[in-house]
Image (tube, rainbow over all chains, first blue to last red; front, side, top):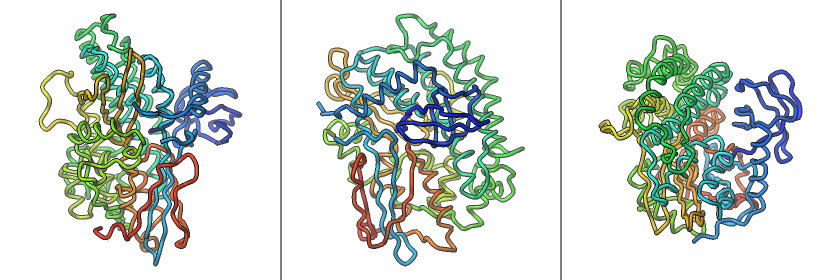
Amino acid sequence: MCIAVPARVLSVDGLVAEVERYGERLQVSLLLLDQPVAEGDHLILQAQRYAVEKLDAAAAADAYRLFDQVIGRPTDPGP
Amino acid sequence: MNATFPVLPELRIAYQVTRDRVTAVEISKPDLDGACAVLLGLPAQDAVDRLHPLFGLCGIAQTVAGLAAAETILGLDPPLAVQQVRHRLTLAEALEQTLWRLLLTLPPLIGKPPAVDAMAALRRTIAAVRATVAEGCPWRRLGGGADLDPGGRGREAAANAALAPLLDALEERVQLAVLGPACTWGQDLGDSDSFILWASAGASGTARLCRAILVRDLGGFGRSPVRPLASETVLTVAANRLLADRNGRFRAKPEDIDGAPRETGAWARHWQHPLCAGLAADHGNGVLARLAAVLVDLAALLAALRAPALGAPAPAPPSPWACRRPQPMAAGTVVAAVETARGTLLHLVGLQAGRVCLYRALAPTDWNGHPQGPLARGLLGAATTPPTDWACASGLLLALIDPCHPARLVRESAHAQLAPRPTGVPASMSMSMDQSMDQ
């Protein structure tokens, strides 16, 4: 299943952004996004190369909370 | 399964080469049970609401699977109009993912640039389709907002009228971007003869890709004896084994009743189509036939988006993209199956007093990443030196199997032991030539 960890924008240079997610830094294309992107925005990536969705601050905070919880949580014990 | 959840999961395909042939393949799949575990204890609606943020790229299919399972347990019956909205949104998502593969992933494998501008334009059209389909519909709500009366069939008819011109535009743009000017699915993709003519002279990037596969004699690369996953298996064998799968073994190596792996995805949906069967007869079910299956899938998706309302008589034969009814299992437990671009997705959901007590998912890559599944079997025995263009051929096979995660092919020393990865990826599997003498 495709996991959708958001990435935080560190900088923007034209149609390329440098982003960070859980310590990993990537350069991604903004060509597929119709919205303007700025430092501090949060993006969903596909193929680790293209930004495909921009999250608002609340949605990004919710997503990070969810993934933080996922990382620290024990897994399915079964019925 | 009990590993640390990998935040950035990756499919790792390690292979060994002896005398210029692949002699062993090991596939390490990420264990994503941790993502499902976060849903335990939540009220059903809250759990469903978290599926899209968790699994964003196929988030609609995941949400629809979770909704269908939970609604069946709760005895909620969403209006047909809402079911239609969910189905069309799932189809639109699958269409976008399929186009992504054709326009962005595959062209660089033959040295061509990805068709980013075409993909961006198509994404805008698909976004307009989605917005029209979903306008005013509480489709994410358990029960589909039946309590709010979303408008029933009248609303559906209005949406269909607004949708028709958008679907016309979408079909025209997809045809132009994928097939090229003056080409149509029926005329150019009806059988293998017309396909070869189109591939030989077509002006689109996809036609050039097919041409490159033929010129480089790679059409048969990636052939595999793995049989397609049958739709009747999904809600019988697979559903029961998923329910019994407390330790994750089935999810790590899903198999059919005969103990053999199965393939899911475009090839499994269309292997009997005259074009796919014809190409397979000439080249085997390698990358050329699989690419043709993706093109047939695209046409099937466009047709399914236009299909009449749910509840109307189903076409014969039924579309592989038709909805399936969820399958009640043990008390308070239901399995729902949803078709996605990459294959069949299963969600097993258990509710107790309205809260999630069990959540397991079986993703397409669980089937296709099996140690003796189509990816491993397709690589095993393959030549890795000229005249075979290994980088191109292996990349094509990987892209056409299309794992759910970023995937990496890694050549290991012939003397290395292909052993399970140490952390985060316990579903590690391997096979060698000794295990596949029947190939």
